Image (cartoon, rainbow, N blue to C red; front, top):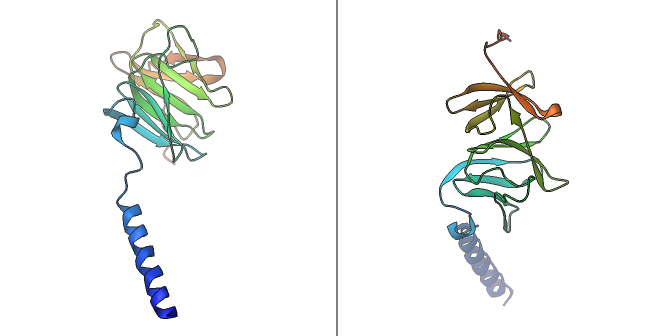
Length: 165
C-alpha cells in the first residue's frame, strides 16, 4: 500500500511540474501594448517593460501600468517608451518620445529631465558610463550628458577622451 501511495504522489507531482512548466506567466492582454520596445529588471526583482503605449511593472503576479496623464506632471511624459536603463544606484531611467525621466519609487512618480534648447526630445537610448556619467542619445539632436542632481541635460559637442582601462 505504501508503495502504491508513493507512486501516486510521484505521478501527480510530475503532472503538476509539467503543467507549471507550460504555463504562461502573463497574457499579452495584460500589457499596455504588444509592441515591446525595452525590458529590464530592477534590484527589487520587478520587471519593467516599455511599450509603444505605456510602461508596465511586473511583480511576479500582476502588472502595474504607467501612462501619461496631462494633468499630472509626475506621470510619464509620453506613452511611447523607447528606452529603459537601470543605473548603478538602482534608479530606473525611461526615455521616449516625451524626453527622459527617472522613477522615484518612494513617491511612485517620475521626474523629468530638462534639455537645453528643447522642450520636446525623442530619446532613443540611455547608458551609464564606467565613470558613472549618464548619457542619452536622441533622434536628430545627438548626445546629452545628464545632470540628475539639477534635473537637466547638457548637449555633448565633443566626446571626451576615453580611458583605456
